[in-house]
Length: 613
Image (cartoon, rainbow, N blue to C red; front, side, top):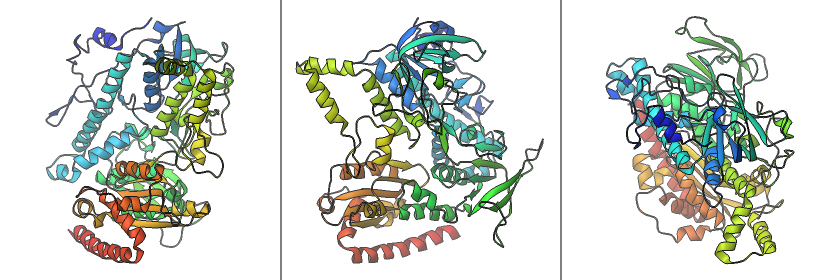
């Protein structure tokens, strides 16, 4: 039985038959209990009425996708559309995955959204809403927070509505519940546990596991989801904290530190290392980009406690206004240096110390699926697991690093291609009029182009974890902090380790007109091979870095040189002018140093002036 998603919504009275009217409901926020914030009416989101698990009992599907994040949704849509045209079921347990929920309605606001949807929405909201101005107008803290959350909900709802629309049009069957492999029935038999603990079983010829990841929770931290959070449970924060303490020195920790600081909170970052940038360098960021991000933390007023860890948590019981007291000690135990902070008070505490694959409750062993020590699913180059029926694939965070939505979606795409390769072969036969299987296999093998040890090449079509880990040209990395940071390709140190004599060309944001006027703090670096000028890597920190990196990625992939960049003409008053400025710096290092020094002095004066104001 396949029931239309929209038909379910219509039956529930939430949507008119023409799809143009949505009934208002009492709360539009994952946190709020009100229908209006201030004087602005909430945009009523479309609620997805999932099919009840019992409605698909004992049915068989061509493909079952477990997990409705960006990886699962995109893979389900791909399989349901041509040339595959498969019968697809998408199963998700949003509450179990720490997703954004509207508690008043049970609506899942994060369907199709990445793990960091809440932080991205908060970041964008922090740019659009001036907390200081709202407080200056006399608004109370709870009213300010309500305004912030409402804006986040609107952003999340846009994505959720579009996902619902696409699933409906593609004919994907969507079920909410907790999916796991049955103890008997091999790797094709699954059961779904509903919210009322009822169980329904179904079968699928192929299965894709895309259940994402969960935050790593160190022992000794009294997580309660009220004042002590991880990077998922922070979604349930119900007020604007005056002070925030965050443990972590990676991307997620820095993102949240800047978010809460931009929202007006006093922020303290607790890191184990004595050198804050070390953690960023370890994950691939250039040393200068890492230093710039750390310097921005200080410039933003974020306090950094280095070489420290929390020894004891004192969380007041029954008094939410009393501060949490954190006793700090040196990393590894022992007293901190004389004069260092040993007691820290805060409204909330956030542990952002990494993530791990979310696979523990899937009963993988019943299907013969092997995992690594962290719970990551072991797969081959085609993303197929060790399942007894050779029919279970995995994609995204369940495979482990790099824990990026972009690479996960690429893996999902490749997994569907591998599952249903015969559909693609048929399409080629129709278009080219050939049925030569040997040619098809040869072409498929050539398309893989997987990297070999010590060889610089692009990643194969499978995007398997081994290829991703060994190939620096596999994907771009973006840090959605404020300012943004991004990179693609090799760093100077990586070039050195590979025996490449590399040079650098650096452009400051303040050296181009748009950067000077609108966003002067930041830099763009080109890493190049001195022997031939080939650009080996691009590293950026500043506004729109996560957008700018894609042009840099094309320069690296196309093996463009410094001379190629110098010969290009870039539109005036754009950040892309920095590519040419960096290329000029590569061929005139002495002159470039003088220009950067002059621009840096002018920028320091400007920043000091703004700080005094």
